[in-house]
Structure formats: C-alpha cells, structure tokens
Image (cartoon, rainbow, N blue to C red):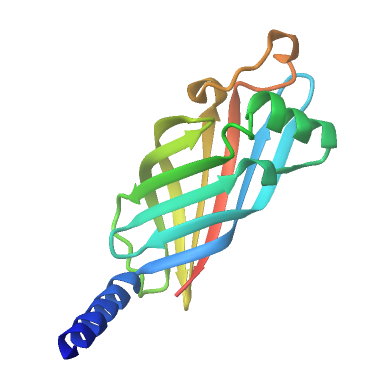
Length: 179
C-alpha cells in the first residue's frame, strides 16, 4: 500500500513540475475586420481560450464561433448561419510554436514568429505569424495581427454579396497570461 502512495505522490509532483510552464487565459480577445467596397465588417470576442506552454514554446487558441459580436445583428446571423456554419463548425483553433527564444523570467518585449495551423470551418492551413510577446512582472502578453483568405478555409461567399465581403480578413489576437 505504501508503494501506491509513493507512486501517487511522485506522479502528482511530476505533473506539477511539468504543468508549471503551462499558462491559461480564458478571456483572450480575437477580432477581425473585413474591408469591402460596399460595407466594412468587424466583430470581436473576448471569450476565446488560450494556452501558452513556456517550456515547449507552444501556444494555442480556441474560440467558439458564435461568440463573435457584430454591430449589426443581421450581420452576426448571416456570419453564423450562411458563411461560418457555426452549427456544423462551432470552433476555430490555432496551434503553433514560437520560433525564437523568449526569456520568460526577464521583463522585455520579444518580436517572434509563430508557425502553426489555423483551423477554421473544418479546414486547417499552416500560417507563419509575426507576434509580440511582452513579459512584465507576473504577466505575459501575446499579440498578433495577420491576414486570412476566407477561400483558404472553404468559406463560400455567394456572388450576389461579393462586394460586401472581402476575400481577405484581418485578424487581431491578444492574450494575457499570469504566471
């Protein structure tokens, strides 16, 4: 019986040692902007979840599609039902790895590149994204801005509204992790 207790505590201590570098932000902010000839479209959510593993330099985001808020309710409805099909594809994810070294224990701003897979609408595509990581005291902030071609993720835009929706959407992502 004592072996079971020793094994249990050894596993717990090993798990805690490995998990020390895993930081979570449950209120990450993701926004997007689409500039089109007839109408600009913008939406934002602060309900994305993100994880940063400072040991392996891996970073991940997951967002529920229907949490994006638009200024016009009809835009939000069309976005979820007609384009993103959020009933069929309820989440978008990004899983990537930071390419440059970051000193997670030293305050500073680090310009990095994150290479990873963005999965939207059930279609994954690899992206190389410039990002800024700021270490300040007990918090780490990660910020990135990049472009996404909607066709790369099999999002169909009917010809009748092609002037209303841009083919390329600018995405802004920010997360704050506490050590």
